[in-house]
Length: 300
Length: 161
Ligand SMILES: Cc1cc2nc3c(=O)[nH]c(=O)nc-3n(C[C@H](O)[C@H](O)[C@H](O)COP(=O)(O)OP(=O)(O)OC[C@H]3O[C@@H](n4cnc5c(N)ncnc54)[C@H](O)[C@@H]3O)c2cc1C
Ligand code: FES
Ligand code: FES
Image (cartoon, rainbow over the protein chains, first blue to last red):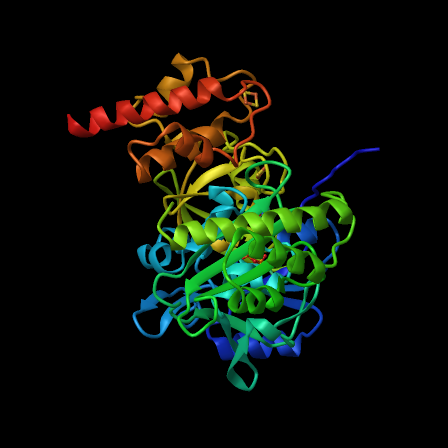
């Protein structure tokens, strides 16, 4: 018997449409046997492992501006679907205004994988472990989607339905992720607990984002999102409410971390047990909030 | 099974190749064009033995379709030597004894060259981070990291000559 853990790719037809209209029509006409292709770093793994059997891969890179990466001082950041993660994380405005997104990108796999891997692919793949999803959610990301009926917006808060499942329908192509400009001085962190420091999928991921907020009782606004601890990437609104209404103290962060722990619903898998994940959510949420506060106060 | 006629450069030379949709850049290099310097370690984007430069940026060639490279420029380990002179990364990895079985070496050399091109004076941490996608089962990495540090210095010297 030969053991071949990662066989060659199965047969399929590679399609390069000339326009988004053509791409959407093809994907809709071949529903169930065609899928959009960006970096392919999820697709090729799933096909080699025998989980996906698509007849057609439709390359949507380089179509009608999907290659654009653009920051506008009022409108914010637009990341075209075909823009790879290295390009995003090295853009000056991303490091300045969206530091948590840059940090999340940096935690993904390796430099050479990030030359291919895209943020839009990470979002559309809808893995609860997707490292850049938490940052895109907390920065209020909205996907621009082209379908058979033209363009529409899909906010990330209502985008994910389950592991690998989103609101997208056959023919839908995400063309860009748009992130409005965050409040001045906002900052945060992404803590990824993997089996090694770099390059593994997360056992638990915690994204935290904070800013000063004169309108709230605490004077601050904090948001937290969790990866790998629920069927979908999870934002925890209870953390935001609690830390808006109560004085910001070390004890308040411990209570907020407990609320995050309560909100999640992890499973046992090869990377870690549910019990371990729950314990880590509490520890890492507290740590992420402390780091965020330090960065807000300019202590780091 | 769809076949695609593509044109691309490999180490500066134009090539015309007909490839099926599912053929990876790695397969095309090794099996169609007999450029066997680039290695197949895992076919899953994990080990980095298949790393090549695609339009100047390192990629795992097992994770790129050959047809996606139409019109692009590829550099493999065979293309690092210029006019019979080894690239500084090749020279220093030999000097430091950073090669044992050698299977990881072509990928390490490409990742190292790309790092020095984008960051001429990398710190030890930056070198380790840039090589995180290049697994080596033999050397323990220390000699490789030292070699890359020296190669960066050599490249800076060459640039100021
Ligand atoms: C070795 C290795 C390590 C990895 N490490 C990490 C890691 O540390 N963290 C992490 O989060 N991920 C990791 N991944 C997973 C993967 O790299 C990421 O999810 C990546 O962001 C996917 O982007 P892509 O462009 O390659 O997507 P693709 O593989 O091209 O597509 C992913 C999915 O999205 C769909 N899709 C693509 N484009 C569109 C579109 N425009 N509109 C609608 N649907 C679309 C595809 O049909 C597919 O279902 C790793 C993968 C590998 C192989
Ligand atoms: S063979 Fe491509 S990463 Fe291992
Ligand atoms: S020298 Fe053997 S794997 Fe690196």
